[in-house]
Image 1 (cartoon, protein in one colour):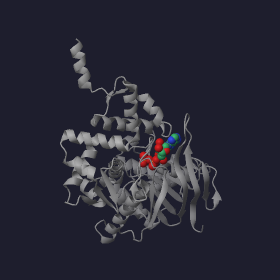
Image 2: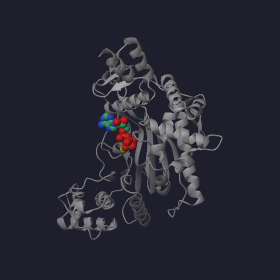
Image 3: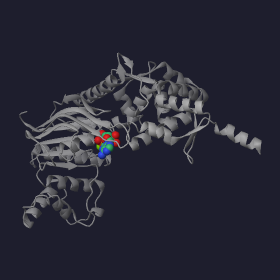
Length: 441
Ligand SMILES: Nc1ncnc2c1ncn2[C@@H]1O[C@H](COP(=O)(O)OP(=O)(O)OP(=O)(O)O)[C@@H](O)[C@H]1O
Ligand SMILES: [Mg+2]
C-alpha cells in the first residue's frame, strides 16, 4: 500500500498453554500505519493491545499472518521503530545524558562525540535541557517519562509506538506531555513519520489522533476505524470535539453490543467466560445510580462516564458485568436497566441478595456448575477444581482473577461459602455450622 510504513496482514496471535487449549489473543488483524498520521488504538484492558504493538515492532512473531516494513517482510526487531512504555526503566546509576546515550548503543557506528551531540539534542527536544547531569532519583514521574521519550527519539526513528505512555502520570503532567508531543509532531522537530499509540482514555484519543481504531476483545480485533478530521488546535469544549467524543462512545458501545448479542438478544456466556474484575459494591452502586437517574432509567453512556468520572477502562467492565447478569443492557449508546435491574434496585438488602443469587445461577454457568457440584457431592470442593476448569481456556492469572470474582459475587449472594485458609468452597452457611459446632460442645 502506498505511503504505508508498517502494515500487518491477517495477523493472529495464540499463546500456547501447557496443559490445555491455547489462548487466542488476536484474530485476523489487518492494519496499515501510514505516513503523517497519529493513530490511537483504543481498547479495554487485556484485549491484546500490547501484544499487537510488540508484533508491529517485530519484537514477537505473530502465530499467523505477516508484518511488513515499507513493503518488506519483517523477521525481527525493526530498527526504525522505537517504543515508549507506561513507565520507563531508567538506569538509576546513570545520569539523564548517559541514559539517553544508552539508547544509541545499538547504533554502533557512532563516535563518542556524535553520540553526545545526538543525546543532548534529544534531551533538548523533550524539554529536559538543564537536567543532563541529574540522576533518575532526582526526577519526577513526568520528567522520567520525558527522558524515556528522549531515549526513544534519539535514534531518529520513523515510527513511535506508545503503550499507554501517559497513563501512569497525574492529569496535569499527562496533559503537558501530550501537548509537547503534539508540538513536536506539528513542528516536525523530529524525523518521526508516524505514531501509533495505545490508550484506554477516550479524551486522549480524541485529542491526539488523526485516526482512531476501536479494539474489541476476546480475541482482540479492530471493530471500527474512525478518521478524525480536525487540526491540532483542539479544544475539549469545541462542539466538534464533543461530537467526536460522542461518536467514539457510540462506536465502542456498538462494538460491545454486536459482540454481546445474537439476533437482537443478549448472548449467553459460557463456562470459561472471562468475567470482568468488578467488585459487588461497584455493581450495586451502578444499578442504584441508573435507577436514580431520570424516570426512564435510560442513560447515555457518555453522560454516565462523565458524571461518574470514569474512563472507558473503568466503566465498561462494570456495564459488561451488568449485562452478563442481565441487570442492564446497552442499546444505541445508552444503558438501560432491565426488569431484574429495577427489581434489584428497589429491593431490601435481603431481597437484593436473593435477586443477585438468581441472576448468578441463571446467567453464569461457572456459578451454576459449582452450585451443582456442591449439591451432588454434599460437602465442599476445593478451589483448585474450579481453577483447573477455568484454566482450560484462560491463562493462569486470568483464571485466578475470574475465580476471585466468582467467589466474591457468590459469597455476597450467599450461594456458597469460602474458606480462604483451606481454599474450600462449601454450601455451609458459616453461621449455621458455628451454631451446630456450639451445640455439640
Ligand atoms: N507471553 C504471554 N503468554 C501468555 N499469555 C499472554 C502473554 N502475553 C500476553 N498474554 C495474554 O494475552 C492477553 C492480552 O494481553 P495484552 O498485554 O496484549 O493486553 P492489553 O490490551 O495490552 O492489556 P492492558 O490494557 O492490561 O495492558 C492477556 O490475556 C494476557 O494474559
Ligand atoms: Mg497493555
